[in-house]
Length: 361
Image (cartoon, rainbow, N blue to C red; front, top):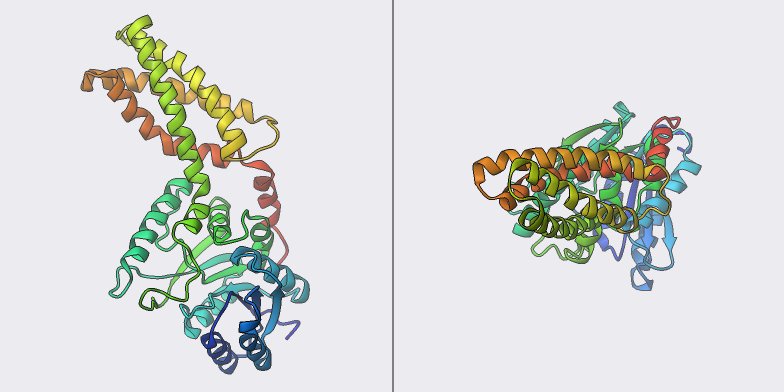
């Protein structure tokens, strides 16, 4: 088994119950696959669960303290890379009973047939019985994911994933130690040249979803923290930009087409400088500038020119320059975020991904 090319099943677990033992037993009975479970600081009250897993034949790795799902996934992937050098890759599954043995096996089979493709088990949230908060939470996260990456995905929160061995480095380099790691890894994958395919899986929810350790507020903020910070930065700078534009329009340049363009340029120079500082130090958290300021300057000039021209054109329709500017700059917001994340404040990880995706299988 140590030299098997079969996919390894990875299950991060925090305070699981007997259903995890049943799941592992079912998987072993159906076909002898390697299963690696991570006890993420569950505590002594749950020792019996992991002892039960060991009796079945599951490899159990242990965190003395709870570090988060992301950290558990990194621990398991690092272990599997060392101990299963020719495995096709890793299929990650949740320990809370939301993934059936059949769906997990299907992901394993799909990954083994397509070892250069990221496989995602996708749920249909339109089915009856799906909690309203889960349905709308997924819709919102899918929208944010699309706006950030340009990739349409119906289920961005799925924990059932078939990860090719060659993507291990990308996962280990992804930011975050808790639920946000899965979102960050998925965004990195969507922006790379890896193939991505989805496989329909069952939708299983208990009333109230009592076994889930996902906190909608705290963990939701972690998952979308980059987009949230960028939004806050943009809103602050948009306020500065709008205020300066209004002052320049009313007291300096006037509302003629040339005046509107000049007012836009002056306001954008001031707000753009402030925006670069915020995005560099707070949103994307970069320590050095490198050539980022040059790339940002190119985007800044292009966006400023487009904004000025479109505001002048739209002013003829709206009759109010301020409203025209809000419409134009609001439309440019998501384009700017994608360009900055993908090409400007991409840090060394973008370069690492280029090497990671050619990692031997």
